Image (cartoon, rainbow, N blue to C red):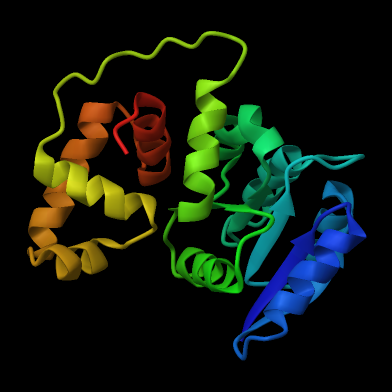
Length: 213
């Protein structure tokens, strides 16, 4: 059973997510908090497998709380609950250590899949969130310049990158594309190098910013 700490300042959102997850047999919302400070206090008292964290909250926002959680509880992954209005904070959340992103109106299937993948050690930008996050990055008021990709990604690397964005592990990518895990590992390393990023999450965000996926 996967235990969840659900953190959101809106009672209605917490109730809705709890209702969704109550339909599952292997995920339970064990504890709830209404802000970042309360979330950290809950973790001081209770052990959970994963945290679902709103970004914008009073007292301590989700980004600040995630930074504290990653410092004191590095083994507990955090999935950020995002809305279209959170677009300017996506990169900050990545820097804070968030491992996944979901829209608050995600379906039960997307919600449970994200929780299970992140608990298994994967990173995830949910397919439902991807389009809105991409739009948000493109609509920021402050112009952002990006260093060009040093070398274009090959068609096979783009295939791998698209599956990475859905949280697939190397083994799952290999099975899907009928390649060896060694080949996939090398292609992932090449993707990270070409995009100038050090991990899969940042690679996916960079690819979204550049319009590669």
